[in-house]
Amino acid sequence: MIPTPQIFEQVGYVSNLKRNVDDLMEEAQKLKDQCDDLESEGQEASRKRMRLTNQARTWLGHSRANLTEIENIKSEFDRRQTSNNGFFSDFPSTYTLGKRAVEKLESVRRALNERSGIKLLAMSSPPRVMEMDVPTVGQSSSQRNMDKIWDLLHDKHTSVISIYGMGGIGKTTLMKAINNKLRATSEFDYVIWVTVSKELNLQRIQKEIMSRLHLKFDEDDSYNSRSMRLQDYEISVKQLIWWWIMEGFIDNVNNLVDASNKGHRIIEELKRRCLLEEGIRDDGVCVKMHDVIRNLALYIASSSCNEGPKFLVNAKVGLNEPPPEGAWKEFERISLMMNDITELPVKPECPNLISLLLSENLITVVPHSFFEFMPALQVLDLSYTSITSLSVSSSSLLNLRALILRRCRRLTEVPFLGQLKELQFLDLKSSGIIRLPE
Image (cartoon, rainbow, N blue to C red; front, side, top):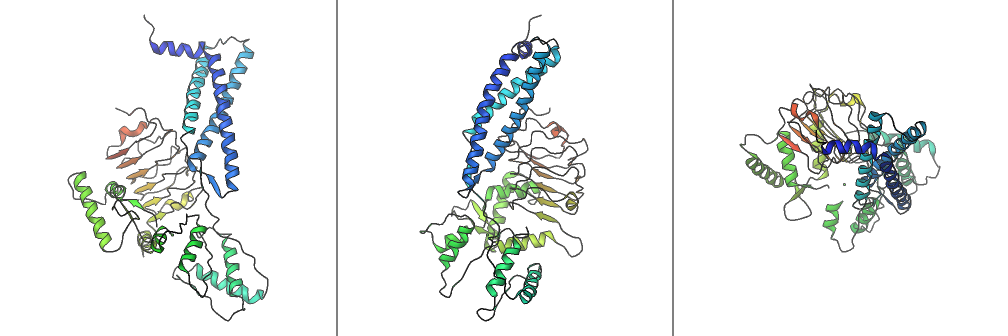
């Protein structure tokens, strides 16, 4: 029998074990140096109102995890070599150790190559509230007024609160106290303090707001262009239409071309009715929604007189963890994209959930039972996450129509794809997937 290349490779895991471990430790030292340098850059950046990008933080987390695994490999190698006087008699376990060393060596080399293409620094998010000094005068009446304002802030029917009175009675002091109290809550994304003088200067007010949000302010920008850049988020028309198609909002069409054309007609109609606006670019490829319209749309979509909430939208608000497991139950659509979530609940009960958007989070693991009580789920977006595996029970995700795993670089296979009989849209672009089920 002629030995196959696979056999030579497997034998090499054992015969070349020491050399591979030595190479691994050499590359690991390079990776450790890169990690240390990156962490130092992050510490220095924080003093300049900068931060490591999510991409850099993800790379750093993966690299530190690799270094921990490498230490385990080296410890086991040293233990075996010492106990057996340099001779490895247990072939199966030695083969496994050798294979781990080779695979980890390849992983470290990939990480070192990826490091050069990573954008390292971005502007850090400003603190939600700037603390202010408050003189302690008239505490009893001020406290009553502050309690009244605090209640109004939490009244969903209140949109504007006006504090008025003679000069010197403590209006500014009262508002500074409210401002400081907001620091202890997470109910508002940003609280911005702007002083408006009698000589109204809109450009100065814009500049203060943009500075507070760490947005670049160009003196040559027009008032209108700065207004557009300030509380709107643009989305590509093409991407928006694809989402509509995947969600099933565009129906009664024969093919994707007809669906796309219908989507463009809908967008033009929404623009004419002032429900969507052109993006800053005037080529028509992007649209945005005024924040008032967006809030109204979310209010309509997220509440009902008798049936309770339907949508949960907490996108790009700096979440470090998802809502509690029990809070998922009533929602039909959940968007937690563009946050810093690292872990998911083990088994949320979501009988009515249709779409779940978790893209651009720091998620590394999806619990096996996570989808067990999501029988109606049709759209799942885990793109731009760091998941390494994705497995579900045979009875889960049977109604899934769209699965987006774009740029899930650490994900190498999705074994349950073959059971998704309703799947129509599958995005694996730039993922690490190397094979699909038959």
